[in-house]
Image (cartoon, rainbow, N blue to C red; front, top):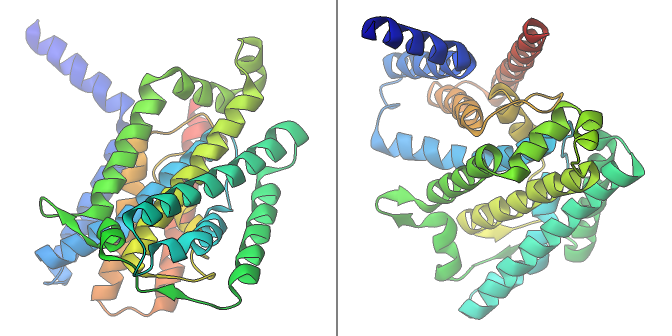
Length: 325
């Protein structure tokens, strides 16, 4: 009897988590292949590089997931990072105080969140398509960052600020720690809070969510604010690690975040996906890019291979939806 119960529990677990387990298997298989073909892959230095490279996309993909879960998308996250960091980068330069640094970080988070409010309001209340709205607002933000800076690059930040993106704690790079904090917080929000249940409900069926008493428009705005705020936070970490700020920052960030989220099982139709899947998606993309770099594969091929992986992720999502229906 006990054996049958154990078998039933294992079977139920496998059925519920078949998608995540299949993605984990792909990551493990890819890692094994890279270990075999590239002797430098398994070194401590390279593993730290993989984690550092994955950390920013993990944060941005987590924010992107908030918009995708309410059947939206956020193409403005790269421009949010560019504008907010360029506006407040002087607060982090050498000669500025810790108070200046705190004010600069607060400013970046405030500007990012305000852009998120604009995105959410345009989608929820005006009814504009998320793709067009976030693309347009992103272009406005990017254009304004060009206007403000006129080609100026801010660099030479204080040691205190540089520690945020370049330091280590207990042997772990700070970007990895911050990415873990974002993942834990948002994982808790989605799985354990009323807001998380509202986000899933709105993404699954807006009309049903409305009739069940959920304030759909407010929930959509919150989702976009979370996306933008997380982007702003990721921008702070990235700026600190890069030790320079320019208006061209983040041009490819939205597509990388969408790729990690989609490969990780966040549905474009909304209402489906988990934070654990995003971790797998971001690691898979990072491992592929890292492996191609170690093998000396040209950047042209890297872009093409990454594109194929994205298409496969979307096809897997569509096939799952069809089976569910």
